[in-house]
Image 1 (cartoon, rainbow, N blue to C red):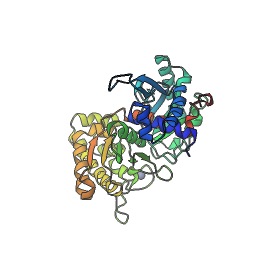
Image 2: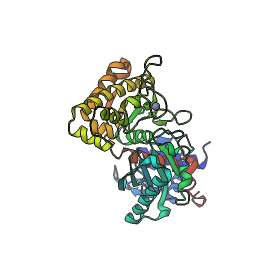
Image 3: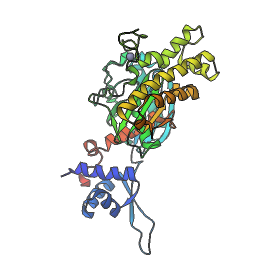
Image 4: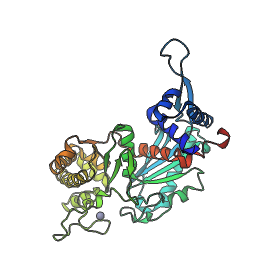
Length: 395
Ligand SMILES: [Zn+2]
């Protein structure tokens, strides 16, 4: 039998994902008796997580009471950290962004300085929106690195080595009493796409191309992290043949990784070798925007490499949708997109591509923030955490 927490969490999930419902509709969806539904609703109404309103009368007589998830019962603070900048926001529990900022930082410089700037940003949001600290129910941070499942830390992150095993929730603990979560950026983006852009899609692959290359997967409607959180590390899959030429050196220490051919940093490296005056990812983006022939050639080539790697992933996990996001995807435009698409269709199994949709993220550059807010809301409203919000007196 479900515990009290499992029960209220389940009923709230129905309202979050199906929208407002009457008591009888809730009983129908959950297969519960009216009295069980009433008990759960009373607890959720008492905790202010659900609001009641009058629905429209379908026939003559009194309209049935309608119940809805109260998405403004609390707020979330989220920060999507990339290699060269971060975007932070204050969101409600439905993932709607109320205020946000994008700030350039050198993330490789180390976690303390970056998180210090993120915290200052969070403080500004609280002030600007007049939101009390107690209203913040969760904090979420994403990084361009593998995150050990449930541990709140990255392990051997190639692009941001100084973040290795740094405990992000512990760093925030003196500042916020609520739970703090750390996630890989591509996982957060995958969840954001699945919830907002493709709500009916159960299997989705998100590929982020920025300074590095990462991917996140939604499998049967849930984020798929693998046994330890390392799933979806597309950027460090091997492209070069093991016996042949080793391929270029990657930031992870291996040779011949996809990222060492096609990551933003690798394209920059190859462009510099041609004598082009480029120092940063911003320079590369500007050069692409100006139609620089060599930059476009390298981006097309990167697209073929990434497309070949995505084709292997499609053969492995058979997603219905592949979403491409991140700064290089935005900057690479049709040159990059067309070459990725072509390789995926050429190299994947016909059964896997018959209904496969390949698309650019419609949530860019906000996909990470939106995904993080859904991720944090899921976590704080799960049976393990919802007891913090539904007090014993409400039972
Ligand atoms: Zn690598």
